[in-house]
Length: 81
Image: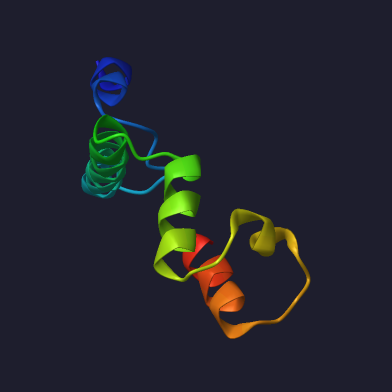
């Protein structure tokens, strides 16, 4: 009976913590997935992000690959990361 009850819980508290911790962690993970899915549905991907940031900071996409240390280029790289 104990083994059957144990299997109905999410995760294994010996490794992850109590059931409430595991449930909270899974809920937090779901929020991240929902947020990413929402952005994806709106058409956001890495290419669009790079294009948008380069436009915003007046930096060419090729400028991101340069080793130059211009302020706008550095800020654009930081924002993309």
